[in-house]
Each structure stands twice: as structure tokens, then as C-alpha cells.
Length: 169
Image (cartoon, rainbow, N blue to C red; front, top):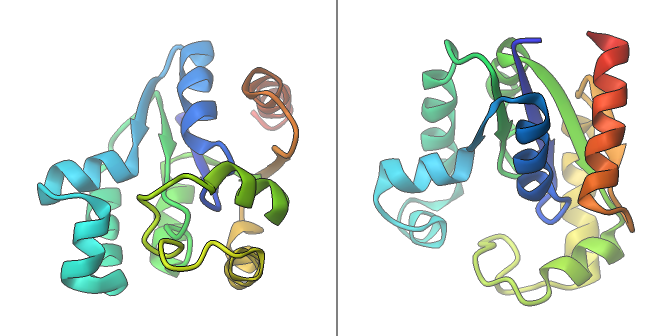
């Protein structure tokens, strides 16, 4: 298996799971948002404030394209990376796409103190989270594997992913 790509709504555990999964697979861990921040030289909130979501998505797509020759990585994507059809194609070309999902209530609980989520900074209500999840669900469903993360430890989620990767590899 060339690479493992983690998708999912914010707060589903992509970063935490990605780091442990990479260690267990002996792969490198890459966080797409970290690459975007390094490329832009400013925070995600500042990117959204300066160029809006469309500008952010353009940077995201360019960075994804730059990863097409990578091998042996676990890539954690931002929650909206799957919105673009072109990005979904890039993700599938990069490797096996694993979508992490959790209940809206769990996501609200996990993100209650976060300040670096531009799409939720002004409204972290359960209704807002449910609306965004519903809008993105068709794109998340495009994954090769889907794993529920509600009320599960990072170690348990990683074990489930490893078992499921063996079945598809």
C-alpha cells in the first residue's frame, strides 16, 4: 500500500490517529494543514480572513498536487479537503482513503475550546456542526474505508484501521 489518507470532519481524530497509524505502519506522518500554513506563512484563520474559503481551497489543492510522488506516508487532511472533486481524485491517486467520522455531539464536545476552526469560530452550535457534516457527507462517503471514532480511544481506532487495511491490501 503506497499511502494512507485520512479524511473526516474536524474533530474526528485525524491528527491523533494519523500520528499513531504512521508509527505503527513505519510511515511518515504529514498533516496537510501544517503544510498549508508553512507554505502561506500565516495561520489557517489568517488565510481564511485574507483570501476566504475559496482561496484556502486553492492553496490546499496545490499542496495536494505536490504530494503525488510521495510514498510511505499517512496524510491527515483538513475537514473540507474532500469537497473538491479534483481533490478527491488526487486523494485516491495518493493512496487508500480512510474516512473517520463521529457523532455531531462528540465533535461539539471535542471542539468546544478550539479557536482555530474558521468555519466554526463564530458558531459552534450542534445545529451548525450537523449542517456542515450533512453537506460534506456525500464526499466523505467516497472513502475506501470508513471508521467510527465516537467514544473510542486513538489506539482502538488505529487497531481497527490496521485490521481493515489488511483486508483491502
